[in-house]
Amino acid sequence: MASDRADDKYYVCIVCGRKFPRGQGIVVEKAGFTLAFHSSRCASKFFRLLLERLDDSCARPAIRELIGELEEANRKRMEKRKKVI
Ligand SMILES: [Zn+2]
Image (tube, rainbow, N blue to C red; front, top):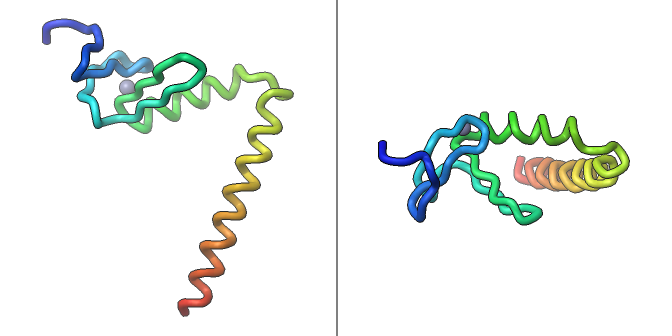
């Protein structure tokens, strides 16, 4: 273990500080930040904390839109399944 800094081949998980190779984990570019998570557990911890800090007026429209899209996708998937059976 040489350095804790991220280089070209590695990311550092922003939640637990673990180093992980490119191509693994979850990396999201948003608002000028590179958010790197070594596992989905660290990602969900970060996003849960982020959601708690977001203002309702900012979070509400995005949540409503996303729930709508996911429900629509679920409905389509269920309909497809029904036709097959
Ligand atoms: Zn982590």
